[in-house]
Image: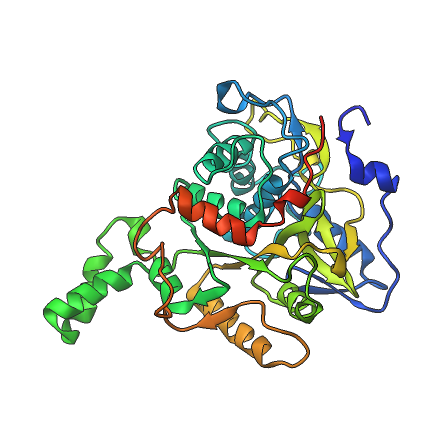
Length: 398
């Protein structure tokens, strides 16, 4: 207990409840388990996920700012977790690392070390608490202020531009609408080059145009830049609309699922699955000392993996302001995701949480397509809609 300061969740519940003995299927990020016969596999799956929590004694944010994010950084940590899951899928392959990557005494793979280093609590890590907090200032959020799901999604999108190793496209779909054409142009930038050449030279020159495109810089020529799709949603006013519950559950069953960031009054969580009417989540509300890499470049990672049974909460307790995440490494995976979403929208028993359309509706303006960054007024407008319940999330005293 000396190594970590446990906050209200663990103090309130005392001990972590064991996983339930139930015949209901357990779904964790696209994988189904049987709680009666696969409890060890479930716990192993949860343990393998990156778990980012409050930290203390890290270098001051901005040089003179906070040295701990206890009490205000829970949504920032949830953002780290959903993006960390995407990086694991991007560099190590989805699900292939669950049983073998994280094990005591096992030599860490270089890709795994690089992923952890991207989140180390220091100013020069791609997705550190320092970078997220300081980038959030541009979204109208002072350092030390609580974020909503939309804000952290917008910040991660901006930070991903500087991650030249992962070369991700982080797309935040606004207005409850995912535009297929918009995403394909972001993930396949050569389409614009090919289109320009086709207009100038005619359709017969298309292959030649693509060959020319392949002579551009590598980051511009990948046939598909891996996609992290974040969809801020509002599933009710003060409480979640029960009409969305079955659709939300279905999202955890999709193989492309990265989970959901959101929470309930006073806390933000990273939701990774469900069983019955309960959501399964990783909780960032534990304060642990900041970690420094070892001299041999290995990263002490025991505190980056949750080693107790996962937390659970009834789905009706979920605050309606959330952001759902999906990862599509290839165009085929994205096409498959689109097909599955369309099937879900045709099912009875639940309302679609968002709309999937082929092309941009005339009433929408795409910030990505215009290559613009939202200014403060845009950020404030979006925040008022998607994070209007932020005042219900109280800042915990240190």
